Amino acid sequence: MAPTNYTDRTIPKISLHDFDARVEEITQQLIHAAETDGFFGLINHGISLEEIEHMFSTSATFFALPDTTKASVPFSHLNAGWEKNAQIRPSTGQPDQKESYQMQFGANMGSSWLPDAALPGFKSTSLDFMHKAQRVSEKLMLCFARGLGFPDDYFVRAHDISRAESQTVLRLLHYFEVDPSAPVPEGYYRAGAHVDWDFITLLFQQPQQSGLEICPGREVSSSFGIGDVWTKVEPAAGEIVCNIGDLLMSWSDDRFKRKEFTQRAMDRNFKALTAKKQALEDVVDSAAAAAS
Image 1: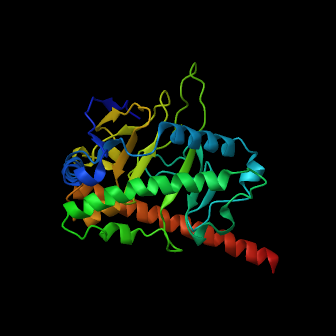
Image 2: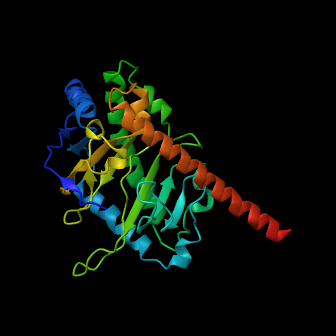
C-alpha cells in the first residue's frame, strides 16, 4: 500500500464553559464545525482531567484481567461485551489489532457486566463516567437540534438512555503494543480507516498516546480515503475529540457531510453489521444443534 499523505489542519476547539448563557454562541460554533470539518475538540466540558484519568486507569484494570475472565462477558448482537481481534474493517480486510469492551445503560447489558467480585467497583465507576459523558452529549444534541431548526429536546429524546434498547455506548479500547525498533508488519492495523455510523462520537485520549488520524468527509475523493490527505491528531490533556457520525449526517440531510462518501460508508457499515449479525446467529444455531 502506498505511503499515507499528511498535512496539518486546524481542528476547531469549542468551549462549553458557561453553557446556558452561551448556548447560542456554542450552537453557531458547533454548526460551523460540523459543516466544514466534521471534527472538533471540546474543552471546559465539565469532566475533570482527574475523572478522565481515573476512567483510563479503570479501563486498564479491566484489560489486565485474564482473557478467560473477559471472555465470560463476550460481545453479543446487542452491541455489548468484550471482543479481541474480532473487528474486521472493510478498508483493510484485516482484524483490528485491539480488544474492546462495550457498555450500555440499559437491559441490553444483561449478563455482560463483570461480577463485582471479578473487578470491584468497575461497574459503578463506569456508569458514573457514562452519565458524565451523556450530559456532555446532551448539550451537543441540544445545540445541533437548535441549529437544524428542531425542538431543543429532539435528539435528546431520540437518545433516551432510560429506554431498555438504548444504543448509547461507552467503548473501552486497548490497542496492542508494537516493537518501536522493528518495522510494522505488512497488513498490521490497530484500527483501519472507517467512519462512525452513530450520531456523534466523543473520543477521550491520553497525552503521548497518539494514533488518531482524520480525513474530513468533504475532502475524501476515494473509497476509505486511500490516497487522500490525512491529519494526525495529537492528544491534549482533558480535551474530547468529537466526530460527526452517519446518523447525524442523515438527520441533517447531508448538511454536515458530503453525501457521496458518507452514503458509501453507510452502505459498507450496513453490510458489515448484517454480516456480524448473521455470524452471531450461525454461532447460536451451531450451539443449539450441538446440544440437541
